[in-house]
Amino acid sequence: MPTTVITPPGRVSMPNLRELWQAREVLYQFGMRDVVLRYRQTAVGIIWVLLQPLVSAGIFSIVFGSVAQLSSDGVNYFVFSFVGMLAWNLFNNIITRSTNSIVSSQAMISKVYFPRMLVPMSGILSVLLDFAIALGLGFVLLLIYGINPGWPVLLLPIWVALLVLLAAGIGLAASAVMVKYRDVAYVVPWMLQTLLFASPVAYAVPKDLQTLYNLNPLTWFLELFRYSLVGLPAPEPWKIAAAVAVSVVVFVGGAFAFQQFEREFADVI
Image (cartoon, rainbow, N blue to C red; front, side, top):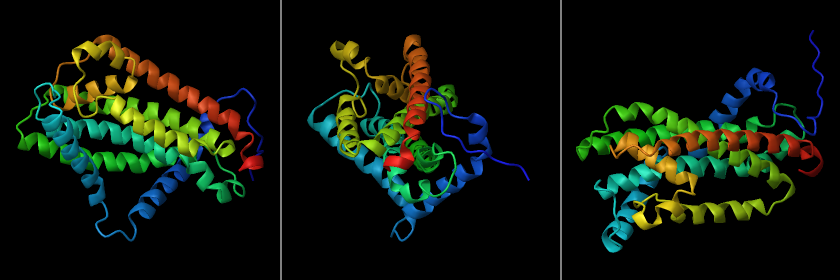
């Protein structure tokens, strides 16, 4: 029989990719458990996934489009807002579910050994399922309003993968820090709420504020999503390169931070 020796991660180390791959079935089971628990004993089930972006897009269309008279770059305001909510919900939900994942699984973590990083990452599966369902509704809206995104729609999986990496990196770091500092449970929702209105989720960036907004990486991703889904012009090449670089750097940094805090999980959780 093979022998497995469990050792704590080093003070300066990265995740063991081979170990994570071998435990991929655990990741799948955690993800499926999350899906089942979320929709069990709900009256309308998966319809909640469609209601959230629809209602949010409708409210944003009234507030920003009709009342504030903000621009949507010539695109129907409801569709413009809906596409922005698709990207935002993907980013927001991954971070939100990852942040509290380690603390909420403390009983299992303190008794059973498995790669701890699988816990915050498992939530990504259910978020992607929600995103796929909402994206299907998005394509229906494109047909209703006669919007043809063209070939750039084929690039959408790349933008989704990059945004998932960015959110997962933040979520990994936040979930690890929260084990020791529970203040994270209050800080992260507040920061995400602030970021929602500081990002052009439901309005086009005014020309005189483009330099300021370009400091926010979410601006690049929102432009990339709208380029692929509603046919707006492609962002500048530097934004695409920056989106790739920032996503990879944040994910690697989040994984590294998780590894450093993981040494103390069993003692403080």
